[in-house]
Length: 329
Image 1 (spheres, one colour):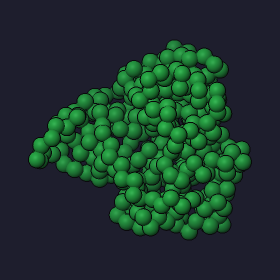
Image 2 (tube, rainbow, N blue to C red; image 1 turned 120 degrees about the vertical axis):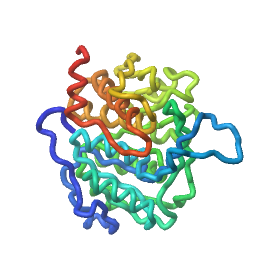
Image 3 (tube, one colour; image 1 turned 60 degrees about the vertical axis):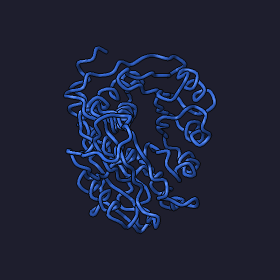
Image 4 (spheres, rainbow, N blue to C red; image 1 turned 90 degrees about the vertical axis):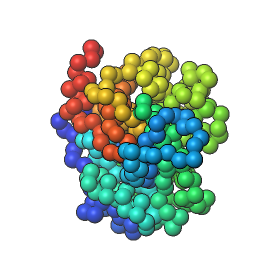
């Protein structure tokens, strides 16, 4: 990605998806700015009167219950593409209605997608969204198999064509990290609401050059962030804190980045962290310093909070840069 007028057009395929995963059949693998691994799926959105939701026999949901494509990898890919980055998404998808929704999202947004067939089905979740925009997610972890692996030839071909890889913490992305490191691409990941102790997240935390983590479940965010940088490869660690902004650890210095004012009413926080990561990477790949990248992230995250959970939209490059121009350098 570039923050100037030299940004290239998105890479895309004619039908968005390539289910034949031989490396020889990966279409348009040349010139990828960001390869997004994992995190494709479908969320069913339920607006509830409050969170936590008190027990009751039933609730009437006047706003409807809707399924839409878009989990963490989808939203990162969407944000990157909206900012003009050539983006390619690689993940497992089932031959099911949910997989069709994911394929349609990528086709409609002109985002290249290589879909590895998943007999267990497409990942899905239920998001309960409260009136204040907070959400509770229920993830179905049965849509995968312990021995799932990305086809190595496909992964190597895409990595060789990419400037950067953003790796979701979904299975089997951890096994892809050595291949990405061997390819020499920059790596980022989002640990989401890691508690700083669960060993599952450590492979991602210590192998990425840029690490995003929510501070929600961290008892001591600074200690955890410094441990990530000290034990791993991270040049930058970002602790996102929602309405309180974000904490940026770069060059050994921890600074606070204020939250941006949303450009409209806040209706849902879903996807805000993914939007932050996308805009941060936009700045990083364009050569901006870490603090400016975090400001981009804050602006994109604030925009995402104005988008209803039933929709999929991301801030455009022009809108982001216009708003960023009002922030003193």
